Each structure stands twice: as structure tokens, then as C-alpha cells.
Image 1 (tube, rainbow, N blue to C red):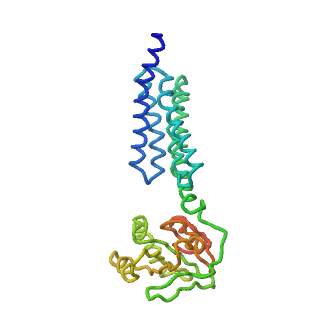
Image 2 (spheres, rainbow, N blue to C red):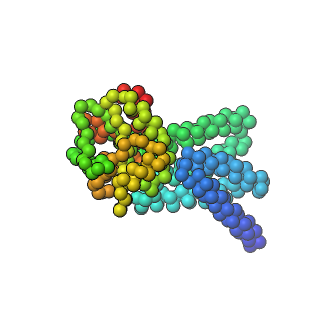
Image 3 (cartoon, one colour):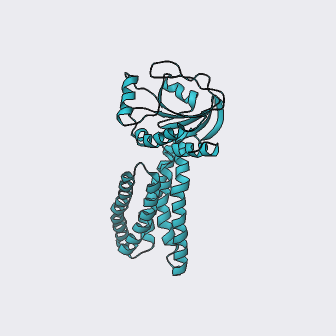
Length: 292
């Protein structure tokens, strides 16, 4: 009985540390809440560091697994259930959730290996983490935001533009091969404004480029006035032309494939051929003969 009580007491002593471990991980995640790349790297480093700390604390190999691995796997299981049951749960959370168990398991498996093996595996693990963070996760972000990894889509025709100029006259696309880069934005989108300087650079280049036009497309909020939105851009020294989408938000996806803001859409011959990020849009334009 004393033996059982001893182990129950030891187990109960581990529970607060396990909870603290999970709390620290999520606190670390929220610091970089809008950058999933650094979330993943931080989580992997955290897993390795907390494993060695707990192993040093308890002078045991199994205790770190019990304290760290099992609670995080339970959290991952909950996340999977939420993903299956709710459309709101983002797949972008999974890399960070998986990184901590990876960071715990790898040093545990290497505990009795030669130093050169440890160095080789840790080097490979570092390269893998960097690949996931800076190659895989950006593609995952793009897929979740725009429904495509590269931005290239199966082209579909724009039946009616639903776009107007500042004076409320209708805007229409030409069908002579001209390429249009559209930046869909709205006035309360901070990311939109952060990317406007880059869009301005592309617009400045377009002035010396034939058969290519850059247009910002505002989706006005209720009671917003076109002239005031134009003044807002001009007050920040942005000179690219702005159009206004006059259709409903529900039709924005069916008309242009736009799911959120900012979204960059490329139109050619009255067909949408690209939906994605600005960096991917610039790559598409270069590949299709636009000198940026």
C-alpha cells in the first residue's frame, strides 16, 4: 500500500508540471500567433529543451515522456476531433501541435546513441524543421487562405465584373490578352495596408509595361463613401487606381473566387486565371512575360 501511495504521490506531483508545460507552449504560440512558421520552430525547440530540463530534474528517461508526450498527444487528439467536427478549426494548428512531441521523442530515442549519431540526427532534424517552416507551412497557409497551393486555378469566365469606378461608371475587362492584377481589400484590413507599398511598386512598374494593368478593388463596408476611400489611399501616397465591388459578399467568391482579404486575382481575356498571395502573383506574372 505504501508503495502504491508513493507512486500516486509522485504521479500527482508530475501533473502540475505537465499542465505548466502545455501552458508555456501555448503562451509561446500566442507570441507568434500570426506567424505559423515561427510557431513550428519554437515548438520543436521547446520540445527538445523541456525534455532535457525534465530529464535533468528527475534523473529519469521515462518521466519526461509521461509528463510531456502524453498530455501533448491528448491535446493533439482533441485538436483532430475539433477539426473533424468543426469547419472553423484550422489545419494550420497541426504543425505546431506535432512539433512538441517530435522534439520530445527524438532526444529520447537518441539517449544512448554515440555523439556523432546525435549530431547527425539533430542536424537532419534542424533541416527538416526549417523545410517545414519555410517551405511546407507557407504552402499550407496559401492552400487554406485561397484554396490552392500556387495560386494557379482552372480558369473560369467572369460573366459580369460587378466593378465600378469612383464615379460609379461600370468597369469592364478587355478580351485582347491584357493582364489585370486585382488586389481585393477593405478598409479595416491591416494586412491589406501593409502590402500596399509592394502593390504600389508593381503599379509603378506597370506604367512602363504594355498589356498589363494593376487595380485595387475595394469591397466597401456599410455606409462607406467611394471618395473617402480614395482620399484615404491618397493620404498615404498610394496612387494605384481603385475600383469598387458592388456585388454582395456572397457573390464575391462565385465571381472572383475571393475567400478573404487581401486576395490577389489575375484576369486575362475576361477569365480568372490566378487567385492567391501577392508574392505568388508576382511569380505568375514573371512566368507569363510581365517584366517586374
